[in-house]
Structures are given as structure tokens and as C-alpha cells.
Image 1 (cartoon, chains in turn yellow, green):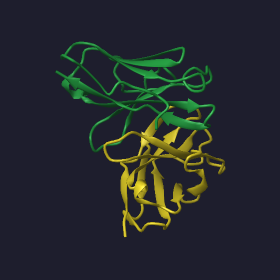
Image 2 (tube, each protein chain N blue to C red):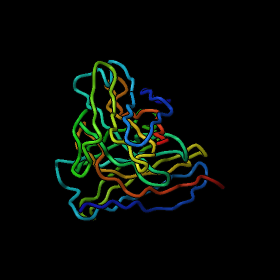
Image 3 (cartoon, rainbow over the protein chains, first blue to last red):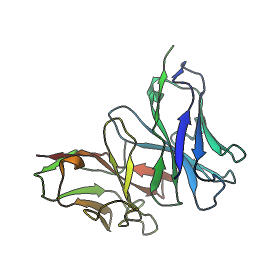
Image 4 (cartoon, rainbow over the protein chains, first blue to last red):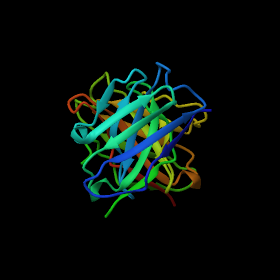
Length: 119
Length: 112
């Protein structure tokens, strides 16, 4: 059964870069049938799509975050990563990594990780 | 802010039916090439996919949950309401104008 696990610092300083990794187990990230995405959620609020990547490295980003976001994939480690630059307090949210088929629903989710932006 | 609008809350007694609407526009739900999905989320946990491709259920999701799409709106139905259905529910789809996946504002279901 496919499992996703987010990892990375839980505390980032303002103006620095947030870096998270999603480790995929129980399935190959190289499967051409699926895309891999990051979604975030402020505590008590709604969901926001950050962006998606496929196994070959093609990316799609939320225009509202595009200038600050980089998503990459490492097929050798079966993981994909998120970098969000110039963070502010508004980036203090729970970050989820997910798997989806193109144009379809997000079937598999990590447990989520809270990242706090604070000095 | 979200481009998909949902009612903040709906409620019903156990065993009854609730419907949750998700209102969008011609660039998202109204685009025939864009499919709607629905998610259930309990406090402190990750969302769970309930409906994908407008009306399909992933394996393991009971047929008490149903989805439909018409025009620029979509609807999630829950029949035979259980206390365990108390959660937040979100719709989502691709927006062709924004070139982004968008989610609804979320609806809290309360079982009276």
C-alpha cells in the first residue's frame, strides 16, 4: 500500500527558504500514471494547491506562489521535494504531499507537517 | 480566496440525507474537461478522497456517498447519515483560466 511521509524542519525563519521532502514507499514514484503534488492548509482553514510534478520532472505551479516555489523529483530515492523561498508568517501552515492522476482526485496523502515561520 | 463556494455548514439527523453544493464558474466546474473531486477531513488529519471524476468512488468508499455535476455546480450527497460522518468536506477541480487546481471553501457537516 502506497505511503507518503513528509519530512523537514518544523521551524523556519522569516525570509528564509522552507524545504520539505516527501518520501514515497510501497510504490514507485517513476510510475507514469501518477503525478505528485504539494497542498497546504492554514490551521482551521481551507486547502491550497501549491503545485504538481510528474516522474520526468515536468511541473505545474499555483500562479499565486509560482515565483517562490520549486518542486523537484528524485527517482533514485523515490521522493519529491518542495522549496518555498522568502517565507513569511503567512506560510505558517500544514503542508501535505499527495499523489494524483492527471486531472483527477488526490487519492493518497501524507499525514501532513506543520511548518512555523518565526524568528 | 477560493473560487469555489460551499455552504459553511449543513446538518441533519442520523439516518437522514445531506447535500453539499460547490458553486464555480465556466472556467472550472463548468468546463467539461475538468473533473470535480470531493474530500472528507477530520480535525488534525489529512483529507480523504471520497469522490473523483465527478461521481466515481475510490475503493472502500461506501455508496452512501455520491457526487454529481451540472453546469457550473457540483453536489456531494451523503445518505444514511452517521455520527462518524461529522467532518469538513471540500470540493476541488482544475481551473482552466487560473491554470491551477482550486478547492472549495469547505463545509462542516453536523449530525444532530
